[in-house]
Image (cartoon, rainbow, N blue to C red; front, side):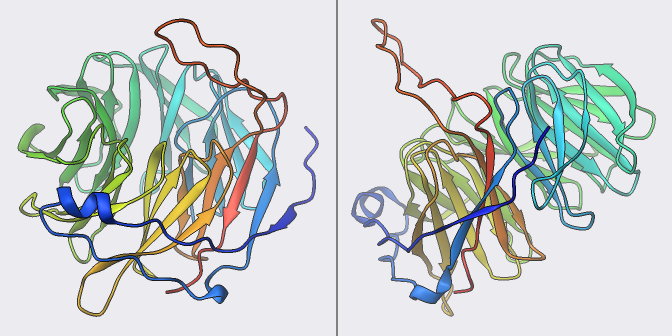
Length: 357
């Protein structure tokens, strides 16, 4: 596969959208957005990758400088310039990748085969394919405190727990709804959004059971989730163009903030104390807490249509967003949505530089 040199597209910050709608619904009124300085962002880099297949969650390993990109039937492994380093084959319907760096292992959630592919991180060699207890595994997470892998299964509305060392399935946790993205605190607590019930669940990883169930209303259909571990704040994004900041200890919604349409990913950079929402409409929302701890939308950066998921590199403070070019959408059938077709070989990784607040 030919890898083209990165091309740079200059872009400017656009004004952040107003918080009026969010403020009326949030338990704590969202502060008004403030403008970011023009120097906060300089350019958007587009890494031409190409190849066939859709994509979902992209995973970034800062230490090795590698991106793990699910592409329908395999996982592409790229360096941070977009050059192909290898791939994990035979992962039908793959959604995500979890990294267990302490065990030199990686894990993929294969939605169509109801399985997890285990591979060696250092060489990308496939070790084993493990059949799971649930159906349509979507998000996948490694919890280092218990050395367990959690696959969150959309169709069966549960989570499979896999021992990351022995590769034996240890159990199944009923979620009570369709699980979406998940994060962990590194101490045995796992958090997961539940899309169809608009909830956030905390899971006791060692006991393998749900410890708490919190409503995310007014958020609707929460998907992406990010975590500020130091301050114990979670960032959940919803389909109704809202991001909720949630206290990870109590489940209380601290505030809600406006984001763009079609968001499927949230991120947090501990080095800059910035949270992000990747919006499929073609924008990246940047959020920051001021000295008093109040959150503000500081910028809305133009990206590209379809860039709905992301990965944050806390070493370089860059944000990586997969997308592609699309043709016109065909006429929709009654009661159905029409999706524009992806232009062949147009897959790319956008690299955004949000800048420091």
